[in-house]
Image 1 (tube, rainbow, N blue to C red):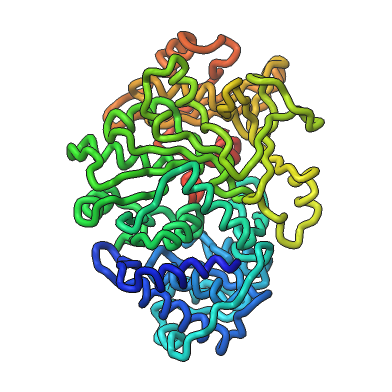
Image 2 (image 1 turned 135 degrees about the horizontal axis):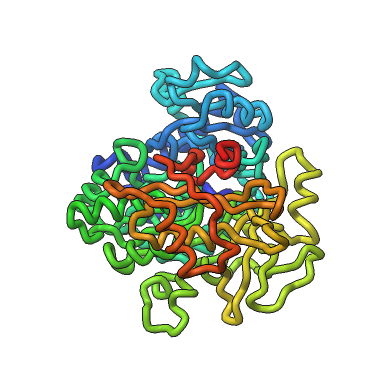
Length: 499
């Protein structure tokens, strides 16, 4: 089934319902959204031969046109190659060349910087608007395995790889949202403040399926004040947010007195949310949070920590559950295994493995990497974690980030959690550095809260109150900011170079 069929159905069921917004301005009803998508699909096919077996890259900032291009590419039977609009042109070129795209829809100010790997066009170009001319294209049939989304990993540890997701994987992910994350109603509004090239964009199909509003901030990205204004004006909003965005929104709420009114659900994921941060978020904005854990290879679909688990403080193990990433979602199987693939008993740390209908088909034109990551049907996520007896998964770290000091394993996240409990610490990242004596030493990079000064001796005393002496950092580096990629993830490779 072609995922764009959901748009066709929504337009038949509620043609006059509001579909697309630019800020608080209505851009299109569902009938208009469908007609524009079908017209654009016809133009793409006629001018660029876009159809089954072809790929269209989108290297642009968030806008309503971005959603139209996504659905038009699917409508034509082709695949979307999303590229974060914040990437450098040279980084985008690597993806364009590897994906062998037939067309790239590119931000106007980036076209001059890109080499001509393929035809380039901007949504602001009059030639692009001409593509919408009738007659509209018929929806092209597609099977579950037909490529729909070719997502390139962020490449923080090397050359990015193209994750192949078919229409079936996107459908399973959408069903998982409705079962495990949240309900969607026509009166709801999906607010796309995070990049549409990533998890936020993958949540568009389920909101279109349900005939909900799709709202792109006028800024094209995240601005806390703008989110609050849209929540007040439009109401009943959902948004996907990385932990860094949640922290910024909570800080803004504290400064302004906003209590979260107008936002029903904030789904967070894409990086570690530390205990201190989510406790603060719930205390400030109330029970509006749901956590998901996934990765490009199984997007948004591995586990979910329900709203009730996050808000409840009556369960005897509520703190442990709050520090977890929840339980397996309905469409997947989950287990923790040793290096041979044997399942480990509860509460033992090992590799996190997942299989199921949302898991990728493999890496684009990279059979070696596919064979290393998909083994006997199981996706080896590269994350280390433990499952408790109730099925809650607690992540320890990426397997490559574990520090081995004096023969003992030290999980950086455990040390980071402790550092973030210090009232003067805003952010923390822990790495291992080579040591002739111990093999590796623990080094902490810390960012002070506004107006605070950090004393390494005080931080050391704080750590010794909560973790074993051998786990505490040997060195504390106070920095103004932590290096991050365009998705807000801390670049520990850059920290190692800095160390």
